[in-house]
Amino acid sequence: MEDLIRQQLIEIGEDPEREGLLKTPARVAKALRFMTRGYDQDPIEILQSALFTVDNEEIVLVRDIDFSSMCEHHMLPFMGRAHIAYLPRGKVVGLSKLARVVETFARRLQVQERLTTEIADALQEALAPAGVAVIMEATHLCMVVRGVQKANAMTVTSSMYGQFREDASTRSELMQLIHGRR
Image 1 (cartoon, one colour):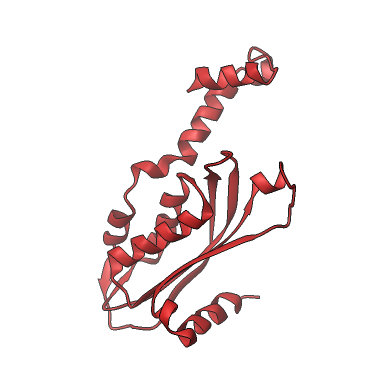
Image 2 (cartoon, rainbow, N blue to C red):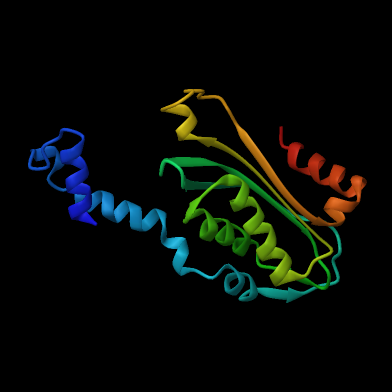
């Protein structure tokens, strides 16, 4: 990978032997491996590693989970917050596992729409809850530093199953819980 990055530096008109760029190929390779480490992680296994039996059937919400990912179209970062909710049906998952699942899928080349759905699908499969909702808000650097250059544009995506999709009052309660922070 370092040889490819060195060649990229040459292609853009830089000198990879310049003092400030000597270690850049190694640094970029290390960063790319970090930002794409989600391919080696199994989100279902993560969720199933911390399931607990409970009687609770009310909304479980973890909001404002910071994440960053890389757009598969430009390989530029996008970052924001994820809000994850589910309605337990006899089982809950350790709360930190929700953040870990976000991280696993975010550490792959992505589009936000698919990222949102993949997280919801994993929760649906691992927990079999009465409902799942994933809402993600993000700023995409491909829209900020190139192209239309709109620094304040926020992309919001959602994926909902079960009662969150079918029952307007349950969905409304969730939205109040998410936006109650402001």
